[in-house]
Length: 426
Image (cartoon, rainbow, N blue to C red; front, top):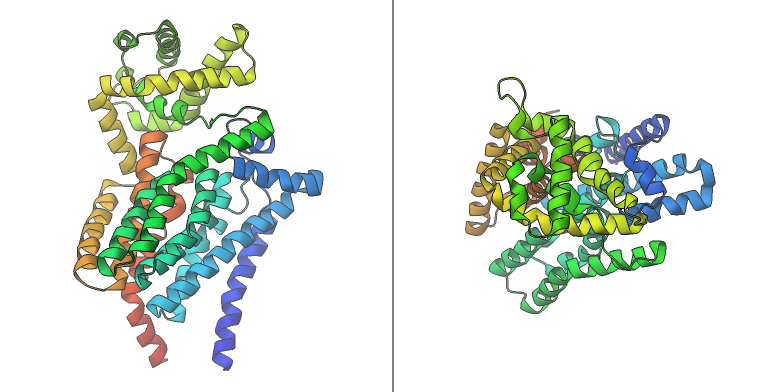
């Protein structure tokens, strides 16, 4: 009994110590933080509303309460995940403690998730919670857990649109569970809700924008972000592919500005600079300053108000993105591949994960080894997220850290028997 109490105390002490660190670290601002605080037109409804709640209650003293609540949400999600992990895999206390420290790492190491006034803070808590529910559904072969994760998945996508990429993974989970054990009636409900989820998210965003901005429209700069890479690998002759004068003018205006600043792939000397690094390091100057703000300013001079400028640029870039990608497909695919590789750090790490993924999927269908089911679907989640980031924006850790713990969890599962031996010997 005494040993159990010591373990319990040490388990909660870790949360407490990290929590104290978070409090003393204080709130961390990014340029995007101020846009969330202003509830800007192109920012997440969920996180903007979350911050609005705190500024309404606490006024200028909102920073500490926000930081504490963000940490509590992350800690609760990790606690639930570890509870599920221990129950399913019967992991030793030592293995669980190591995983606890790894899952908490974004709060005390390089990212400081609980401190940053960014949507990633809420997203991390939701990702861990959804991962736990997905694991329960897959291992216990119970669709009800996939039904339970639909609401947090909805909130997650509404918080950060990149997590639309998780929908195919959950759909695949439904297929896997039914392959092992037929649950047709409940599965049809999940399939219907999953396929309807993008439309539900879209309607929710429109409703939010109508209430806050009096504009019943979807807008989060997705097309502006996505077209930036296409502009980066483009050529001056691409102007000819566009049919309308507005599209031609926007292309020419943006391309000229990028060219003058030296932010085009074709103008780089390969032996002097890594073109991927140039894009990553100057993404805000390429996307925010030139693709976006330059064209907003142009339409401001034309007499359009703030909302009309945003809507006009979004509509034009949405129409232009596919033709521009198609006309530079080889260069764009090469760019996306290198962008994807960078999300994993190195190509060797990406290949290692792919090997583990394919082997785990094979073993999952051939046997009932739950460790391989878990790792297969967690790596699928990682690849889904990283792939959408590689396509849509620049591959910085801020957008990809959510599943960095997966390989560590995989290793813990396979070395935990040695942990148990050590504990038993001692």
